[in-house]
Image (cartoon, rainbow, N blue to C red; front, side, top):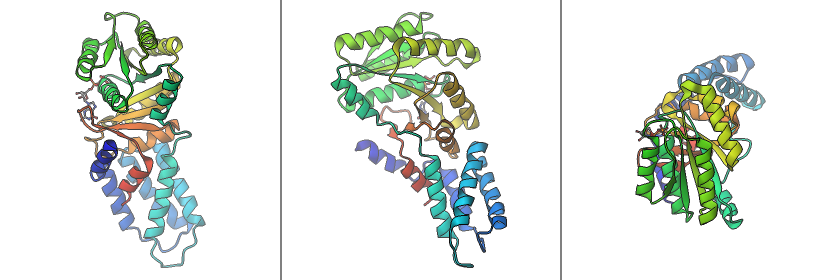
Length: 314
Ligand code: GDP
C-alpha cells in the first residue's frame, strides 16, 4: 500500500523528458489520412523521438511498425481529429511492448515456498556500481515488511569493500549476512547461505554477486557456478537507468550467458529519458520487477506497465 502511494508520488516526474517529447509529438500530429505514405513519415519522426529517448533501435522499429499496422486498420473519417486515435493506438502498442511473456508475483512465490518450508533463493547480477547491493538491501527491507525472514549471501568476494558494504546494510536492517573472506569461492558462500536458511527456517536468501565486467569470461563462469550450485528460484538482472544504451548491451550479455528471469532498474529518480526500460522488457521478454527511485531503503517501487504508459501518455 505504502509502495503504491510512492509509485503515484513518482508519477509526475518519472521519465520526464520522454513524457514531454511524446506529448509534444502527439499534440502536433496533423495527419490528414491514415495512408501508408503519410503514416511512414509520421512513424519516422516517432522512431527518431524514441531513439533520442534511449529506446533501443530494434524496439523503436517494433513500436513504429506495430503502430502503423494498427492505424492502417483503423477506420477514420477524413479530416476528423487524428490525435485521440493516435494516442489510444500508441498506448496499446506501448503496453504490448511492455508486457513480458510471463509476469512474476514475487511475494506470492515466496509465500508458496514458505508454505513448502523451503527457502526462496534469489541471485542478483549486474555490473559494478549499478546499485546491486543497495537493491538487495531494499528488497530485504521490503520482504521483511511483508513478514518474511531474510538472509544475505556476500557472494561478491572480488570487489574490495563489497562484503563490508553488505554487512553494513545487514546490521542496519537486522538481516544476517553469510560471508567468507575476499577471494573465496562465491558459489560456496551462496551454498552456505542456503544451508543456513534451511537450518534456521529463513524464508528468503538474497545472493549478491560480483560485477567486474572487465574480466567478463571468468565472471560469467563464476555466476554460472553459483547457479549450478544453488539453483536460484529467480535470477535477477540489476541495471542502472542512467547508463542508457549501455544498459541494453549489459542486459543482453547477462541474459545470453546466464538467462535472467527479470530485472530491477535503478536510479530512475535521476533519469529523464528512460526509454531503456521499454527496451529491456521488449528485448528480453522478461519483466521489470522493481524500479529503484533513490538511496533510501524504501526507494523501491513495484513496476507497473499500465501506470508507466499512463504516465508517459497523459
Ligand atoms: P553495486 O556496485 O552495484 O553494488 O552498487 P551500490 O549498491 O554500491 O550502489 C552504487 C551507488 O548507486 C551508491 O552510491 C548508491 O547509493 C547509488 N544508488 C543505488 N540505487 C540508486 C537509486 O535507485 N537512485 C539513486 N539516486 N542512487 C542509487
